[in-house]
Amino acid sequence: MATEHVSIGRRLAAAWRVLCGGEASGDPAAALPPDLAVLRGRVASLEQDLRERDELIVRLKREYEASRRENKSGQEQAAADALEVLAGRHAPLLSQLDTMRYMHEQGKELRAGDLLKLLSKLQQAWREQGLEAVGQAGEKVDYDASVHQRLSGGDVSPGGKVRVSFVGYRFGSKMLTKAMVNAEGADNGDRA
Image (cartoon, rainbow, N blue to C red; front, side, top):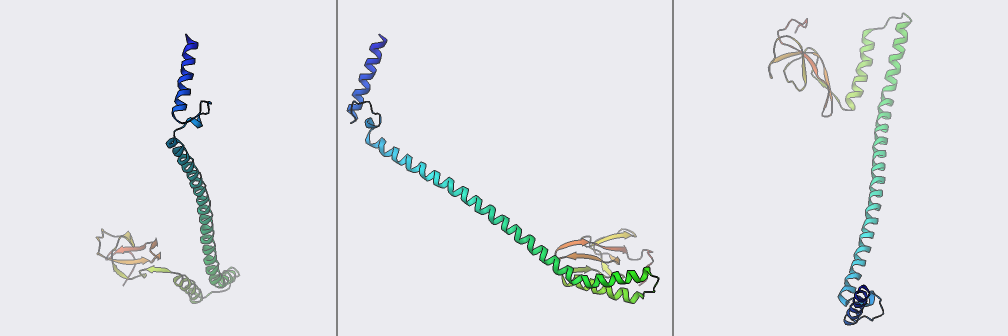
């Protein structure tokens, strides 16, 4: 009975192939309806498109990584160049400072005016690079917590009068150090 079943199954499959336009040869591709052959062709075309897309994605990722590395390298070089320019501008001033230090160690008298003149040149070089002072020592200003830090004295409300004890600095939009202030009227040794 099982043999009959297989035999009937084979005969039905062969009949189906003949009806679908294929031969009874047993070739499955020959038994495909015309629409199915077209669909298989489209599937093959889509698979090729997917492979090409995947290759494009891989290539674009490589190009992006190379561009990112090149950009990072360019930024690092620009930062190194800027630092070199800054060091070049400060080297003569630092050389003078080292000479003054040596003279002091040898017991030679240094004039405060000479030292202040040298440090003023250093300060000016930094200002030219974008370093900005916040306040001036002894100056009375309105308290602003974003640029001032209270040293002593009573409570200070925003806009209250304070005296700058130590100048603060910002570089561009970044606050490097806040100006140190005392509440106006606090006994801090400063006299206006």
